[in-house]
Length: 140
Image (tube, rainbow, N blue to C red; front, side):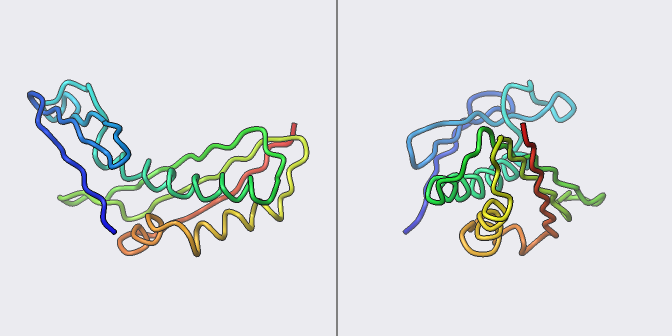
C-alpha cells in the first residue's frame, strides 16, 4: 500500500496539493517569507496530520466503546529548534473531552491505544521529536 499526492505550483509561493481521498489543500508561505498568506504552512500541516490521525483513532474508539462525549478537540503545539532547518524538537498534544457523563478511564484507554498502538503519524513523530500528551475532561 502507498499514498500518492500531487503538489502543483499555483503562483508566487502558493501550491495546491491533492490527497488520495480526492480533496485538496493550498499551501503558502507568510509575507515574511515572500508568500501571500493564502494557504497552510507545511510544518503546521504536520501537526494537523498528527492530531487528525490520533483523532480518527479516538473517534472510532468512542463509537466502539459507546462513550457519551458531546465534544472532542485536540490542541497541538510544536516547539522548533533555533537552528536551520528548524524542526520540531518537542510536540505537545492535548486531548479535550466535554460531556456530562464522561467515562474518564475508557477515554484514557482510547487515547493510550491511539498513542501506543494505532496512530502511525504518532509513531513517525516519535522518531524525531519528544511527544508529550495531556488529557483534559470538561464536565458540563
